[in-house]
Amino acid sequence: MPRGNACPTMSTGRSMPACSAAAWNTDASEVVRAGLRLLEEREQRKQLELEALRAGIAAGRARGIGRPADEVFARLEAKYAV
Image (cartoon, rainbow, N blue to C red; front, side, top):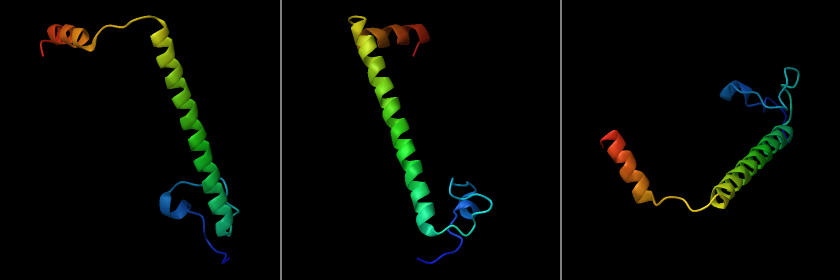
């Protein structure tokens, strides 16, 4: 695989973990691996956020029956004279 400046820092303005100041000659496969690690971390964060949202929904449902949306919207429209 050809070596060279595979670090995206110059074009994106953001550095990647594999692209340290001394690693300008990092090969492309290392940059791709670093990118894949970042994607995996982002996916893990999304999963944690989704789990937190689901837990919040479950907690809200466990508190009991909510109000019908029409009732809530009518109250808000009256309050804010929409």
